[in-house]
Image (tube, rainbow, N blue to C red; front, side, top):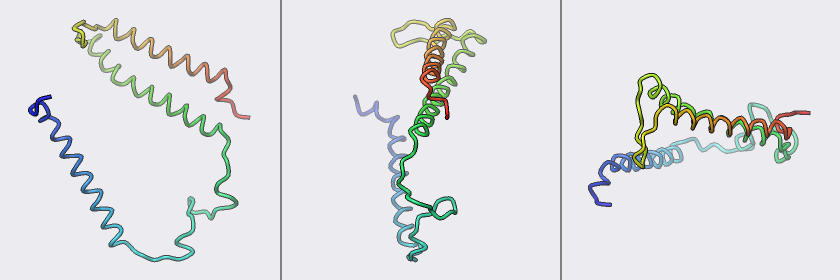
Length: 138
């Protein structure tokens, strides 16, 4: 890569450096200027305004984690549909075509087929988890 081809990325690098410098300065200021009161009340764990009852290191049922992971999985897959909606709208309503890396042209049929496949996998995953009982609570 020639040095001139890296010029567009210089702004991103400078922004990252500035953000890192601001973070370091804020952490130093918070540590140096912040209050330094210590005591049993200040050092005790705080959980939603309620004192902790019992052992705080108890094990949770795996279903809590399973539901959280399923939510993240399907939520992220739904987020991937937003760019597709825009591309499909441009292709279907305005007749736009998109050139792919190998030079082929992708129209609304190709875009629709890709999303049908993606959505079929999403529905298949949901049905699979439903049949396995991951969404059932006793």
